[in-house]
Amino acid sequence: HHPDNKRELMVFYPDIVMVQPGDVIRFLATDRNHNSQARDDMLPEGAEPWRSKIGKEFELTLEVAGAYGYFCTPHKSYGMVGLILVGDVSGNYETLKTVRQRSKSKGRFQDIFARADALLAKQA
Image (cartoon, rainbow, N blue to C red; front, side, top):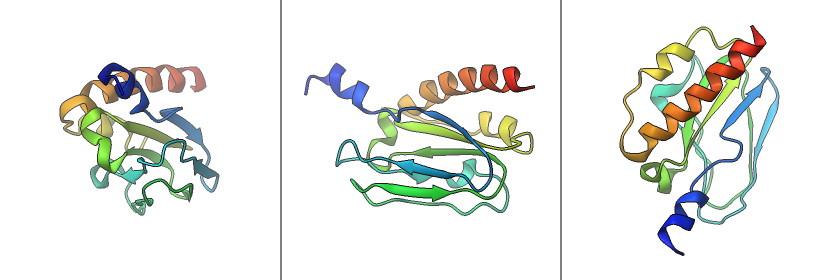
């Protein structure tokens, strides 16, 4: 892969998902080198972290309302990160923005939060 092409593959699509508590989220393995792992420091209080197997389709049901940050374990430094907004996210959404990010995840999360702000403003 040309490096620029490869970087575009290092994304979750969509990278922002809005659901209600109890909804099922399905991660499809479009590439066998990826997975999904919760960031322990980007979860609502009382929520269980997850880590799917590399290259496997994965279903996740989130019961606790709030915002969840996650990443692809092998490609976190490439900025392969995402955000799940479950129901009312007011409890921890702003706190998630202050979590320290490294490498390409930093800019990617800034972009994700800018778009999430707009989505949440529309809902209000």
